[in-house]
Image 1: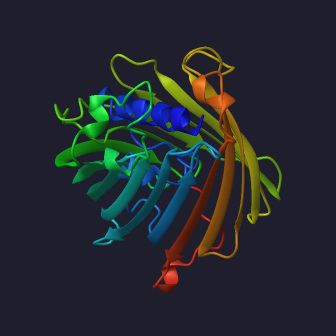
Image 2: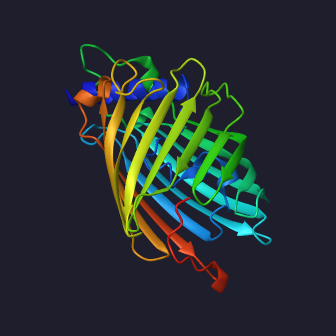
Image 3: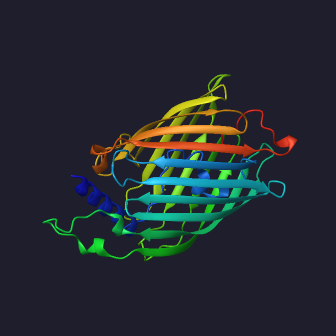
Length: 315
């Protein structure tokens, strides 16, 4: 049984890499906008360092594990933004380490704080495939597929992307293509992203922050993440999310999706910690896994007195 599960992971991962290379999935996309849109860097007007750790499909051998570390900051009187990020992704015998450098130009559109940002992203992804790590039995009556006897494969794939980001104190929206080049090695396809969110004051102590994240690529359904959480006294937040195909409310069918919960706290003006749990439904994996855990940690450095934020920034 264990062997069959491992082989399923390998086959799934091989399809995942070779048929349509997917960008890493995060439930905290509203905090991790830098990973998909270079126009975001420097928009929070502080030096921000963030890490997200995601453990997907718990109790499923060889399931995806992803870690990312990013940093971004405004430059030259906040007209420019600079960012750097590293992402490590592993699924079974396949792994990749990606890095990117982001540069954004922020154009102030109105005196009330509306800004339009143009971003460029450049970097690359180092792939590694090693089937030798699998414990396969040569005496198995079914035999071993020749594909699993292939040597270790390594490849570095450079890429670049662009992004457009518009933000105010109450809402934001963005369009981006973080990786424009399509590579023959992994048959990767260009992905298009749209993201938007807003902030509503329900009362003096309660704010509501809804957001949506749409992912598009050819030969695959358009998918979206819909999230909303309430912020209590600018300290604690609690909410939920749904991941489904565009046009569907409930994530069912072959495409599947997920439902989840998220919570977090602003420890002070500098530190924010978030946690989410989501569960896959409506697809092949939901029968075998125990859901996915994700942890987010962000620290904002504020060096000058004018940078002190009286209430936590939301975008």
